[in-house]
Length: 222
Image 1 (tube, rainbow, N blue to C red):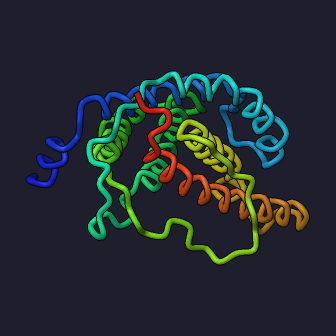
Image 2 (image 1 turned 45 degrees about the vertical axis):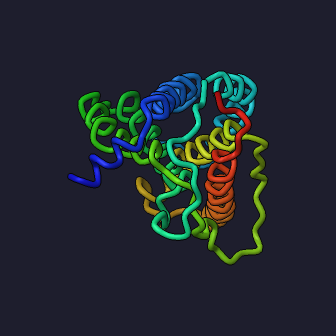
C-alpha cells in the first residue's frame, strides 16, 4: 500500500492523462484497420493487415505527435532500482493490453464487461507505472541472433507506432499456435510462419528499446 501511495505522489496528473489519451488514440487506430472478427491465417496478416498498417502510418504518426506529451515525473538516471520496469518494457505490455481489450470488445464472442475490467485492473496499473517510470540501464534486447529488423524511429511517436503495430501483427498471426493443430500444418506453411514470427519478435525487441530511448529524449514534449 505504501509503494502504491508513493507512486501516486510521484506521478503527475499530466503524464497519466497523456497515457490515457494514448490508449484512446490507439483504440481509434485499431478501429480503422481491417481486423477480422475470427482468427485468420498468416496470409491475412501479411497480405491485408500489414499493407493497411502502412497506409494508416502517416495519419497515425500525425495523430500521435499531436498529443501533448508532458515531461516525465522523474527523469533522473538511477544506477539501481529500475530493472525491467522501464518505459520500453511497460509500453510493450501497454500495447498488448490495448490490443487484447479491443479484441474483447469487437471480435466474435465479444465481452464488454471483460474489456472494461481488463482496462480498469491491468491497463490502468501499467499507466500508473509508466507515469512514474525512470530511465533504466538494464539490457532490453538480450537475444543472440544474426537476424536484423527494419525497426527505425526518429521520435517517441514513431517508436510507439512501430511497437503497437508490430504487436498487432504478431497478435493477429498467432492462430497457428492457439487455434490450429500445429502438427498438422503443411511444412512450407510452418516454415514460413516460424521465419516471419522470429523476425517479428526481433523487430518487437528493437522497438521496445527504441521506445525507451525516444521517450526520454526532449523532442516531442509539450
